[in-house]
Image 1 (tube, rainbow, N blue to C red):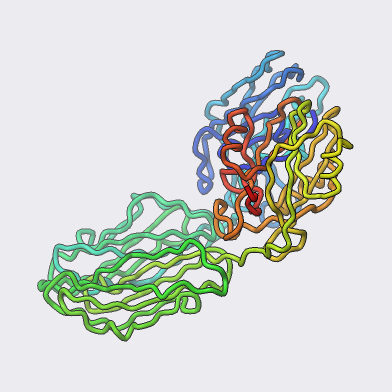
Image 2 (image 1 turned 90 degrees about the vertical axis):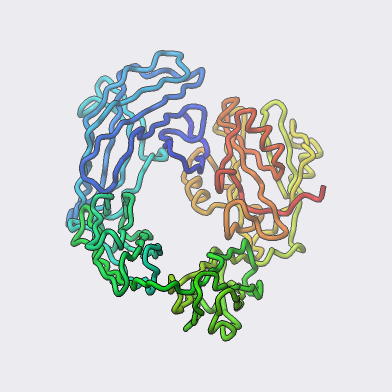
Length: 535
């Protein structure tokens, strides 16, 4: 079975064997796997897809789950395996065969770094060992779930030591969030029942189970509802498995009998895309005292990212009378590409102080220069039912002149940038004749994908052929002056792989209706960003 180009799709079903061609084995974990508890019971599911000419396996099959990694201090890897689950062989000529393992016990130690792999193997006469040969090989794209680094010691939660809710009217509620990080090297499981408060009627701990992989964080919400006038205090404890020690949070507040002023404001502001070096604003932020009969005195207004979200006019907000309003401004000026964030903090003597406003926006590169644009022309081979694109004037002349027989223009084009154009990434091109008599080309702007395909003997690297603009904010968002080309894969129809690249959503929908599969960045399957066609 020949290996076609690997699909870059992020989905729950993991594909092993040759990818992404007509013959494949899909395997998945049908039940939940808790990465942070040593003992698991999992269910595996496999679907074997056969083409019309493939011979079904002659021996029994089996499914198993394996973990391979290094224990601390070990120089050789250790492999852990489930009890194998036997599967009857697939009937000759069958197109699809589904198998389920039923519950399988599996355990791995918390120490070390582990990779989880689902394996489908076949019993072969004369095979060494237990007589089974893996259907997956080292050269196949493995179905791997990265469990992350582990250690022999447990997880460790780190977060703020105290929260002060300030003044709160008795019988009313206020919430605040704390950011807790797992700074250990083992995963943490924080079940709901492991939360407690020494004053549960007034300080309510966060609820809902949480899993924290090593190095990750989670916001936890605490609620304060004073039941009496005067200072209130408690300790909130969050425990879990396996922790060095419980996380303790000291919470304080003041119950007030008299209604206090309360500032109301917009909770957040977001901006889709602003070019690096430019600025958007100023943006007005109003603060209104809409609760209580007392003025609110503001002691400070600050932002934790003043370089990209500078404030102005904060001196206008010092005292806000009941029913009155004040306002200040901020500007968004990204210094780098990607998502940029900041938090404005407003401290006052009003209810709920300190209060925060979230800010986020996207920084994008300036569009590449239009003077460095070439035109890509699409062709179709009716006999092969294959598509091909090129920006090479020499190839275009030969294709139009019949030097390469069988190819005809589809009438679709789009623009691309020359190699090494600023704000773009070079696109690699590969060629294969391993599916004769048909041949095929493949393009990618993903550096990792280009590197991976270079190792596949069925595909020959030809050259980097043109530039595509870099997606810098979100997969579906191309910078101004560009549009996404959608990449589609024929799933091995006709016995040979082929990809089509188009900027038109109607063409994409028609190809999907004919069994083609989206590939590339995001669920839409995007090659990068290119210049829209003139038409």
